[in-house]
Image (tube, rainbow, N blue to C red; front, side):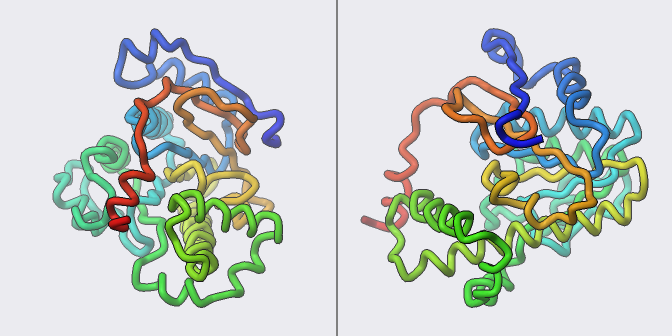
Length: 269
């Protein structure tokens, strides 16, 4: 299924406003549209609570059905996992296993529900992101650019410019783009290994930002062609074009926020 035929699951704004997360019935409707599949990529906007609620409900639903093979998180580095922990492990022990620290940039309270839903179900949670120790090597690895077409590469570079509000010097655009490509590749390799370990009839769920799950630019480009997968993007507000996904989970618009002003403050400009 391509982006032009993306399925839009229309939910009432009043319904979403009445509860903190979509009811399980709507999650079941979503899963009916995208399952069965070996890999389910759930994209999000990181500051939209409804999106993390969707992730939790998907994980709980698949686990209850006995279909969840593993949960891969962009928010933890590859090489860290909860395999071997008991189902009643404390959040502190889970964070330690995933090396999820306050300095990592991802607030634990935002993602604790989805992570702990998998742990409580006895399903391993795997860090999928490129380790910080490998970022310097990735920045210098021009071979990463050969994994994506020239048009996609240019779009990735433009995304880096815009994502940093044109505050980065041009000399940093290529190295920063290589990190983005390396992160997608690392998440894809983590997912593939998880699928192989989970076995037949199981679904591996990847939770990552919408930019990482895009069919035309992200993790799907690095997955083996024989691996069945579907992309669901959770999106706050109305989309002007069909997103590069198999399904879209719309949520109410977020309050206005000047990300560039915040970034300029960080850059002290």
